[in-house]
Image 1 (spheres, helix red, strand yellow):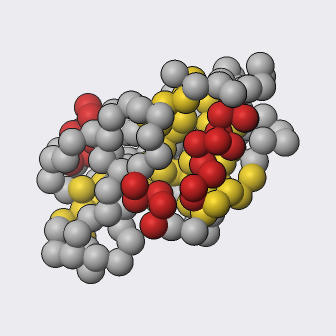
Image 2 (tube, rainbow, N blue to C red):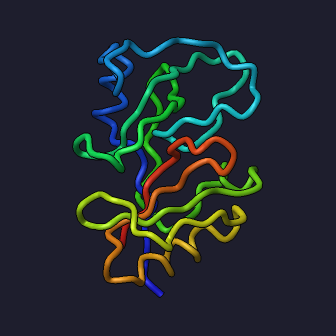
Length: 157
């Protein structure tokens, strides 16, 4: 099995959004206050606690626009938080949810057909490792199984 590492949104990108940089649709991120109901930050991979401010913004986790470069809503702590370390450990927050959609992408940043699957949270690392065993897969996206929102990327270690 291929060794993996979870890769969250880079800190410089999170800081830019917090400083009101335009999102993938050219809009300033919206600021909201969490009710504590499952709002998860794509930088620290933790839930935003009740009463904490967070951003909602359109995010495209790809280097450039192209037909497979999906844009979708994400959440981000409005105040600085520590980036989730690049590690093979599944973020604890993942285990609080039922499942995730995993999709493999090639070096051209396009979906590799046959890699997409919804998996139970506890199986994310194992299934991502198997997807990355394929020579035609460069990385895996972890997305919400319910809403398809980007959560993080999984790379080879």
